[in-house]
Amino acid sequence: MKLLKTILFVMIATTVLVRVAPAQLPSETRKVFEEIVDELDKDLQKLFIKAIDDNTAIVEFTPEQFKRFRAHHANPFEGLDKIDTDKLQGNIALKFELPTVRNRASGKLERQHPNYLKDFKPVLKSWANSVVDIKIAGKSVALGTIVSREGYILTKASELKSNKKVTCVLADKTKLQGEVQAVDKINDLAMIKINARNLSPVSFANSAPMPGSFLVTGDDRGNPVAFGVCSTRPRALLSDTPAYLGVRPIDSPDGVKVDTVSSPGAAEFAGIKANDILLSIDGVELKSANQLVNRIRQLKPQDKVVLKYKRGDKISETVAKLTGRKFANSNEPKNLQQFGAIISKKSTGFPQVFQHDTPLLPEQCGGPVVDIDGRVVGINIARHGRVGSYALPAKHVKKIVENMLRRDVASKNKNVEKK
Image 1: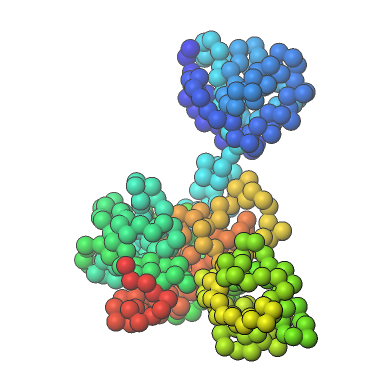
Image 2: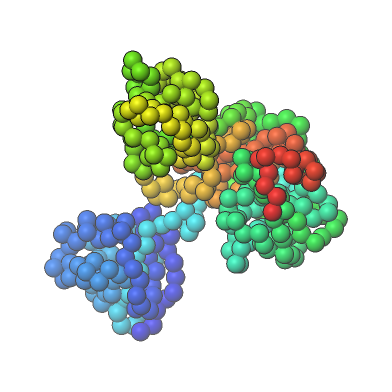
């Protein structure tokens, strides 16, 4: 069987001509098969029913079956007309895939198309040698920003997955082993050290971009990977995982009564039970349920609180280690990848960020973001939603870099954990 090995990027799915081999059927592709099967003729129905039953994304057609399916009104897959059946001999095996953000090419009228991006290359010229590709096991996981001539590189910490050793690829394609020196957990930044001298560090701007400003992100070759528009001024971004004690407190004549205890939860693990009377938290007398709620809101997951409580006639104390409870955003699609976004592992809870609408991938965070005048106005720190990314402002980053480079300051900073 002579096959053309080609990938066709289409609106609804990717079709790949393959040699027949196992290919598991993803749930979303299965749904497409199930939606079209009833509208096909019995001959074509058998092919897709077999694929569903065999849990495979590969469907094998005879040339005649393929032509009928390609012309059928129920066929949702664009791009099949690019397959020249006259050049093929025997059956045609197609692997159907829904498109992912990473394998989808931008259309000619989309603003991220290469024809538009190339116009921004001069903006990145000054910092083309200041961006690093951070790899783990050969896979790019983040961009890095050179912040010192002596081999220090700043990058996004959570994408390193606790790895202390990474590979840093410089603009001239030199690959050097890097070691994580320190991590700033709150800002999700890691400082990496490589054995190199006379590097080209970035020079951070003294002011943040104004809303409406064009912003450009480049790769380790000085090529624009995406551009967008600044949406907000710098601001604090609260975490979507607030501290959670796991009780429903109510006011009672005896004090703050525990109406219910969530399972699992911090209170349950600490031994608190329904109908217990909470007398104090961290030595502060509790006079109302709102007082307890407000105190917990001031804390964060993993913080510990000392609870004094009364059960019957006995008064006891216990320590509860607070957990986190994620609040889902009902306005976001359940599967953002279908809408062009892959969310960063840590995408919220930053003390100072500005938002822009650049469509970044998680592995494109950690590098500098530049305004139209070529000023480094911040460090991209997260893709957080369908149409938004976050960046740490340059002024904020400069202070972090100074602290991380000064070992004595870093060791005293409770938010910086030395590696």
